[in-house]
Image (tube, rainbow, N blue to C red):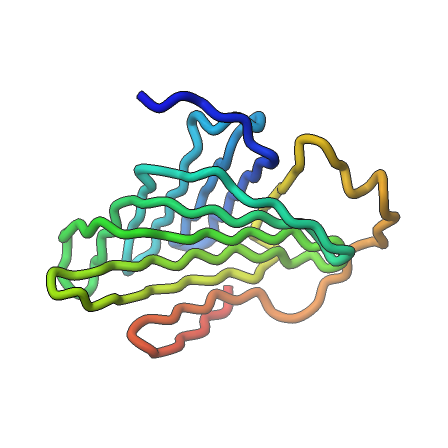
Amino acid sequence: MEEPKICDCSGKLNLDVEEIIFTADICPGCISIDSCVSLKLDTLSFNSKKVNLPDYFFTVKGSGLSVSGNGILTLHEDMPGKDTSVFYVLFLFESAYVKQNLASITFFNIDGIGAITAYSITFVAKQVNLKVTHRDTDPSEVFSFPVKKDIGKDIMIIVKDGQVEVREL
């Protein structure tokens, strides 16, 4: 069993809308143990097996984290029920100015002949319930943020095999 590590930041994501469930608990309590990422759509499901330590960043527009790891992706459309081991990169951004937050995950698979395929899903929506924190810094102590504005539509963007699909949530 892997030893727990102290993280610089943590993040919690919960999106449950229509038939979409996207959750992430990254370094809960700033300890690497029990980190997990999962996503369920009508076309796929994903569960992390490993979550690496996250990187935190802060700008005057908000705070975010990125994390990578590996897990199991099951596509329900191409080859139903076939589990594929993949690498993933997760990016979470909690906006300081607008109600829509961002959650994006990209899966990478290298097949037996070395071909790389990528599948990306990005959500920009009010339904992206997200909290990103740094263990040493509270941005609200440094900056005074205005009331968040509601702008634009809530969307999901899917990029697969070079094809882009945009869905309103």
